[in-house]
Image (tube, rainbow, N blue to C red):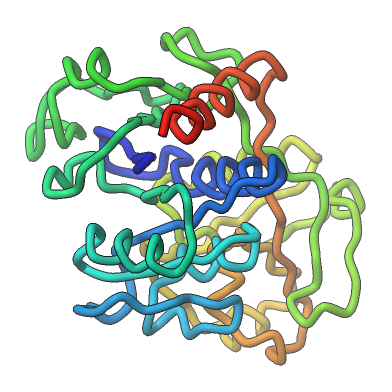
Length: 277
């Protein structure tokens, strides 16, 4: 079992890292599966298989996003250990848990903690006085620390989530984000730290007007379209809305960029778990 989690609240990039690692293992000829609690969906007391067409309101938005992006089975259940057992019974040789660093009922062979390099650990205090779910000492216990932000001074292996194109929500086409330069757009990011998405769009010369949306939540696309501006959303948001919504609606596929040496290190260490068994 490989746990990909964090020790602070808010988005750090753990779900994209989980998808990247699962896809990398699949490309290496391995049989991974992903398990998730399915936050934002209905509480599933029994393991449920997620497909790219599953209802995010039932299984959660992040599991559907992972099912679309990673070529491997995705399972959700409030009992992630039970979901992992089901995944193995269905043929997985290695299971990745999206989140769950603090879910100690679940056995683990390898732990990855993902940190936002811009925010770091905030004031270093535990909730509710600060952003931490666990003491910063926990970072010394995990197997790898991955830090989002190539220029960050926070210690760990650096990575970035890069976006460079926008895809129509209805699938009718795509265009480089640079084509939106100089235009005002509504930026929809129902994620833990939307400011990073806003900054990524702004780097293309796009005039960003943030749309307030709760993490894992939805907004009225009809109301946004009445503004007469393009709406650009994250991949996590895109799975919540029907592709038949029409209008000037776009989403941005994000890819994990990591130096080759770091990619090889993480993948080599995880594959070693399989070879050891």
